[in-house]
Image 1: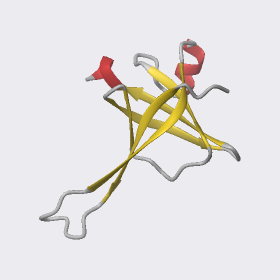
Image 2: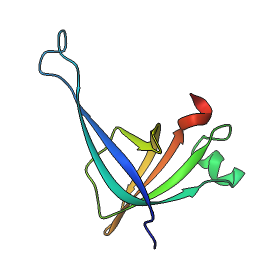
Image 3: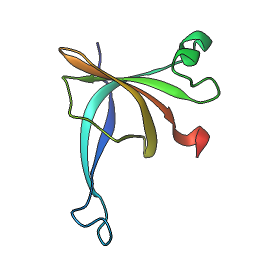
Image 4: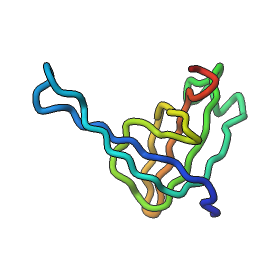
Length: 98
């Protein structure tokens, strides 16, 4: 598999004092393979029929992530599959949904 794209994994940690502090955001840039999900049947499985959706393959298992940034646009993670040698994210949103 060719990992020819780059994404930023965004992890958010809740603040120590929820009334006065903001969540801490950690960013990590990794290589990935980005595949658009175009089949209506696959989109319906994930409940994403009217949205843009991508399957993003990242080499090696990664820690839990809150959001993904691809080409400067934040995407929502709908499903995560952690395999022995890779992690797959199903993401939606991005530029088409604001």
